Amino acid sequence: MGKKLSTNFRSLLNKIDALVAKNIIPDKYVHILQKFFENCQPIISKNGKDPCHYVDTYSIFIDIIEEQFKTPYQFQHFHKKICSPFDYYKFGLDFFRPLVDFPHSTLKGADHLSEMETLLKAGENVILFANHQTEVEPQAIGLLLETSHPKFGENLVFVAGSRVTSDPLAIPFSMGCNLLCIYSKKHIENSPEEKRKKHTYNKRTMRRMLELLSEGGYAIYVAPSGGRDRADASGSIAVAPFDPQSVEMFYLMARKADRPTHFFPLALSTHNLLLPPKTTESELGEARITHGGALHLSFGRAIDMENFPGAKDLTDKKEKTLARATYLWNIVKNEYENFPK
Image 1 (tube, one colour):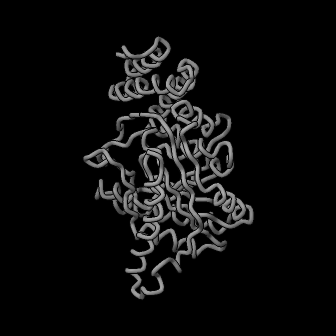
Image 2 (spheres, one colour):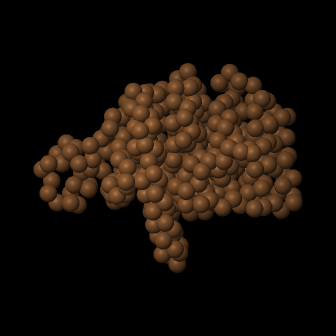
Image 3 (cartoon, helix red, strand yellow):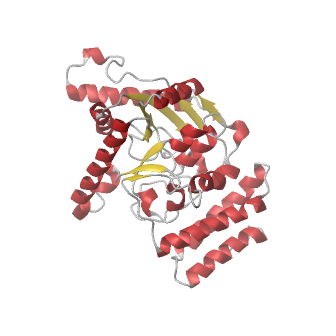
């Protein structure tokens, strides 16, 4: 095991082996983490960094997941990032930083980001309708905004599915994010006997979000597709269609709030930082494969959710709902297709 790893990286697997021997973590996580560390080492070197410098960070990660197997962290409907006594936000950035090819990464729409920050300072809200590619999107966004708009990345609230709040390998990163925790539409159906319970949970989260929007000053990331963009049979990755009902729900909640909310599109390419599995899986413990590389973000201009192109010709509510979601999706898709290949 770990033949491709340096002595320092192999020590991480020895540490995991010891936890398996004590029946603290299941054996399958050894193979998941072995593959991840085997991916990491050459990527870090390719990015001009010494992999040995990151062994301590990855060792801390193992300590945190050990604790999660013993006593899983319980997330509230609205989870505020934990920065003390241990800074989980900084930890998440430091964990993935050496895997990113910053010289070839791109950030577009800095002027729109500045506009959003002005709105937030005035006590108004921002909702970002975005595509979604990896469970570590918050860390990817935080890293690319770290120099130009650090507070925006740090304070951004993510609507997060249950996988990132229940998988022990994802929890250490989720603890460092602001999250509105829900069950995604794809996973509500997994356990029919729990469907009502999950719907009730989601309603409570939405009520909490309404409270935040009424308080004002929040920026919220939403992925209306309800899941991650995945590669097709040819290996090409396309932006998954936006669910019209998801877009409509967030629009409705924003209109109910006491403070104004503004809507912006966000296109991102983060797939290679932590690849999703080829299919949607219900069981926890999916593979963690990283190819590293460049990240790309493009923040678009504010969207008029009522007076978008073609809206005035639509009288049927369902048709307008579908057209609104399609319009948003096309903006994100077009920006995504313009990213460097």
